[in-house]
Image (cartoon, rainbow, N blue to C red; front, top):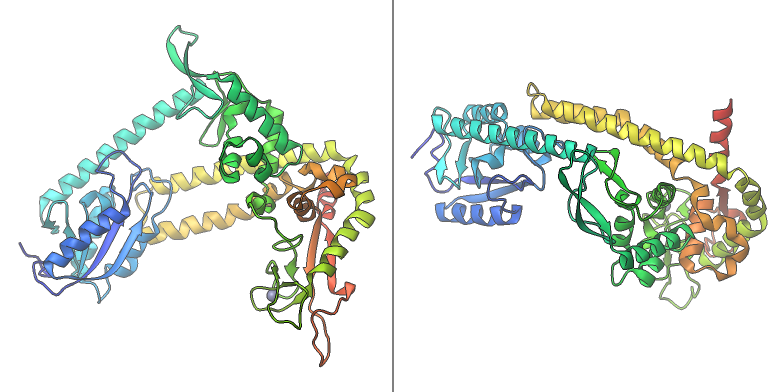
Length: 482
Ligand SMILES: [Zn+2]
């Protein structure tokens, strides 16, 4: 077998393209498995592998929700590359399941004289061969049918409040009869496990760190998976499907209000580092470099001259300051100066919570609109992959800043329950202290003009800027009232 590039020849340069799909069709080989098989074939044929491009866990179905950066690269810079003689794939459907895209791809390859070799069929894919087109049409139809059918079924189930997937911890599978007397799946509470879920939720809402919650009740689960578990809307009897909430047909373990507060607490991006196990320093990763904005690191220098640990800009070392001084300043600011202010503002909590709830709902609605527009884009078949990528980027630029701003309001300062208990500061753990500092203060370590001596460890309190984050929330409220 031969084509215009002579793919039966040895000594060619090959680019391997792999794609792992979530769909049930195909053998479902992982990217690594595909690469191994394809590499072996290239080796057998005496081809040099010059590039391996992968798209992992993306569905290439007609209804794909995400673009495939690897495939885009394949279409824009590999297929026409002078260094690539042949593109090798594990099976034809790894390239794409969209027939228009496939036709376009094969046409392009032919134009640039780049061969396409399909390992699964052990054959060269040639433009005027009818076989690949038939297979492509089959692949696409199969994908449309399965995805339409599954999507319709999933939506109907969601609307009926029927649970989906593995029951979350605290529940077990059960059946019940729906309004029409039909037997449907539901969830039943496993009381002993549900008790643990309630304890964990109460713990988080009372201000325990995820790490502490995991340690006490997690039974070996890491904090990260406790977070994921507690964010399961099923615990409040909510069946969430593609961003929409439906009433589940099972009993709730926690209230919707508890679930909403959990989300506000756990989705706050500033809380990320509270899942780590080791005790950290008060301000590392929280205070930022006043020059470049990078969160500072706590460092203990090895040499004898500088015994005291410092917070230092890890990026370019723009600033360094004695850690003990920064810690003292921060705690002093928090307790002496801001605690009364925080207490006063806490009186506004109800209003603030209402604002947060509204912002959270708005953010979710916006996310849904963003997703819907992305999906609509993915369904358009008149777009070249590069146009698709451009338009997706435009959409992201339009929606992401708005969503981010709303989510910031939603997960704002006052949701940290520890802020109301600053009088118990002494009994706080290091993680709790860090979470309070992170939520209450913005800390910048400024560059100091020290003259020729340049001793960065000289404790000058003015060289640390501490700004209460609460300003943000109150400003926001003022704007709303206007
Ligand atoms: Zn810096």
